[in-house]
Length: 200
Image (cartoon, one colour):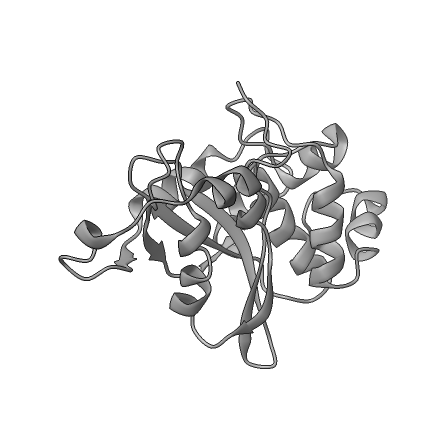
């Protein structure tokens, strides 16, 4: 593995996670935080907390440490916040590793043939506080190796990754007219999604 800027101890900690499932389990142990930050994987290791963007970038670094490409994937929403995750392929199928303040927006096992299938697995539970289903688009994979010259694994912050995600093309999930026919999330599902939710 190329020089990442991480210490030997930090690399050992990432490699000790061993599998994508191990990375997801580790993310689940980290408290979610609501601060408007963009910490590098090194800072996440040192602070012991992360939000969605930071969790995805951390997971991409951990994937790289165990031999996968450091890929992330962005999903855009309407009247809601976007969601970023790390993605990987096993056996020709896509899986995801994610940190979220919402119950259903976490990881996915590698069973999805396409990225559209993966994105659609989030559609039914992706909602805002008005109970509206809000997921609208998804991006192509972004290999964070493109930011190696900016030392993304140890940088003071990684807002440049977030900015890149905003700039790249996204693919629509809905055909024209579908939005008008969407139903709202019912109260039971909404309450389940808020299990353990942190509020500002």
